[in-house]
Amino acid sequence: MESFTRNDKRTHYCGTLTAADIGKSVSLLGWCQRQRDLGSLIFIDLRDRTGIVQLAFDDTTDREIFDKAFGVRSEYVLAAKGTVRSRGEGAINKDLPTGEIEIYVESFKILSAAQTPPFEVSDNAKVGEATALKHRYLDLRRPSLQKNMMMRHEIARVTREYYYDNGFIEIETPMMIKPTPEGARDYIVPSRIHHGSFYALPQSPQIYKQLLMLSGFDRYIQLARCFRDEDLRADRQPEFTQIDLEMSFVTEDDIMEMNEGYVARLFKEILDVEIPLPLPRLTFRDAMERYGSDKPDTRFGMEIQNISDLVANCGFSVFTGAIEAGGSVRAIVAKGGAAKLTRKEIDKLTEHARGIGAKGLAYVRWVDEAPNCSFAKFMAEGELDAILARIGCEKGDVALIVADKDRVTLPVLGALRLLVGKQLDMIPAGYNFLWITEFPFFEWDEETETWLAMHHPFTMPLDECLEYIDTDPGKVRAKAYDLVLNGVEISSGSIRITDVELQQRMFRRLGLTPEEIDRKFGFLVDAYRYGAPPHGGAALGLDRLAMIMAGADSLRDVVAFPKIQNASELMSACPAPADPKALEELGIAVVEEEK
Image 1 (spheres, rainbow, N blue to C red):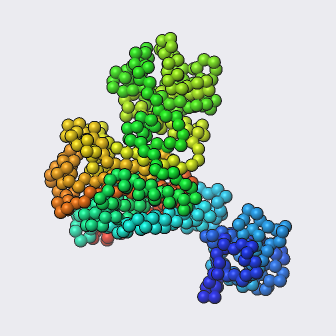
Image 2 (image 1 turned 90 degrees about the vertical axis):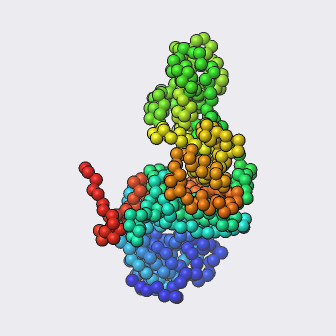
Image 3 (image 1 turned 120 degrees about the vertical axis):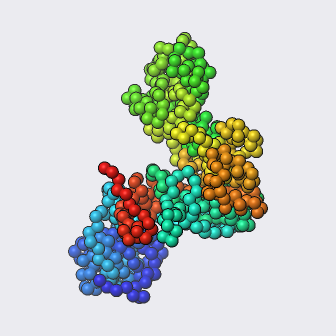
């Protein structure tokens, strides 16, 4: 292979050349996408991160250069110098941005040869995910992934510029911290010096950014790396980046308005999409009642409707029993869905509903003159008509009905709404932002039979709810807010508690003893005694924003080296066993699982 010298440095990127450059002498560097040997003509498609341009070698090319080009194969790394010329009218490739031109090569080097790759580096190639991730460095050469990575870079750039312009100071917080309860399992790091003690990788910089407010940095920003040991899914990775911010002397409205300005600027600069402001808001209760989710996709309707009053005295015990037990009967209507939602499809939906907690699924499918109703025989004259009129179910529609406690009916119908919306292609393109506000402070954990903090224990309750903390925790609503985009939570935040006595009260309500409070949060509680400004903040998921803005199906498409479902990385084969000597120094013994 030939060595790279200063004389080989590029003058242009491949994809930036146009007809305006005809006649220019250029120096290009990149990979061979494809070599075509036509006898007296050789063409090489040279690729870099900006695109592809065609290199041309013909019978006027220096013979040594021509022979060298003859030996080039896919993914060779090349250096080429030459003159930009027109391809000629009949040879223009209208599918390629550089399709009007080619480079007549006058100097040529093979900087690195390549074995035949395990798959073609192309967006059109059919490659198994395991193979692609095993060779992620090759997968990342694909134009679509390079485009995603560059969009992610642009998101980071706009983020910093926007918050810097608004007076925020970027401050890094520690990566090895004291383990504190944040809602998921910690990744822990053993200490060699302090045997038996451990650091945790941060699930968020929550406590540190609050301490920065106490330190007088009234506007903090950080593109923070965070770690959570939890089950993965399409929009979740064990390590992720969040746009973390905190502000002093503010209300919820101040923080929400600041972040609205950010998303408006972000979408305008990167996608040229106007986001109308102010963004709409829904309380948590209204979101659950209407959409069955605290992160609803509001690009389409099919809202949940309560029909409990219409069926409270009907002859169908499934309905009446649910109401008598303190639950409700609720429905969604798939307009025009009868053609696609056959009995077989409804049976599949019923099984899905059972799998997520429902006892069953009642339905009305209206194809012919009379609707086909799964519970018609239990209805008195006029009762079914009243239901259909209330929910707006007409000929051609399908109604799906669930009866149970609200904690079952609402999320089940919310999940069915999304499933049916996708099946019927009801969800339009576009970007629908929505604030969800007034979250419950506490949520009841059935397994432990205790009250837990829905967000985190430092969230400020609404003033009018303070009286219920000790007597009726379920009534306590928080000064908390989430930003939702197309059914995906992209931000979560709250106003923080700064009153020491109130914070201690919340800790006690969560079942923490004075000793536990001191052990887990003593340094934060102590800090509050020295003058804490009112403050609050939020964290936006950079990965999720990038996923939605790039139109990707998974976070794996916007993360350079992602983990798979079992939190392993196929390329480097991590996690891997540690060196026994290192474990010995840490005082750690690995116990084999019993088979």
